[in-house]
Every structure is written in C-alpha cells, then in structure tokens.
Length: 79
Image 1 (spheres, one colour):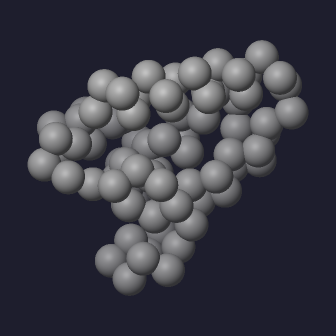
Image 2 (spheres, one colour):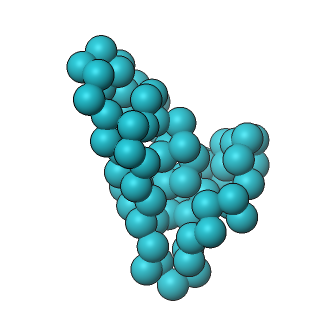
C-alpha cells in the first residue's frame, strides 16, 4: 500500500481517474481495490494513491508482472 504524504499531493491531483469512479470508502479505510487482469496496473496505482486503501492487481502475463515490479521499485526509490 502506498502511504499518502505531502510529497504526493501534487501527483494525486494530476491522476486521470477521479476518486468517485472507484466507489471506495476511503474515509473509513474499509475498502480495498482488486483488479483482475490488471495489465500494467494503472487503475490499481491510481486507486491506492487517491484513497490510501490497499490495492491489488492480478495479472498472468509474465512480462507485464515483471514490468510492474520494476516500476514499483523505481517509484519507491524516487519517492
């Protein structure tokens, strides 16, 4: 799960999918986001950034999984 902090405020404002599209109860933190066939994981990333709820993606194509794992580590190092 990606934690919200001051560094992410500007990034969250620029995400293309509004939080209302996820229909998540972020205020009570009782929701989680699951994307079956998540591809490169953009909706999972956006939901986690905007709601601070856990997001999970399930993907069976190995190349996509590897790409997403690499991007996750790059993101963690950058932020």
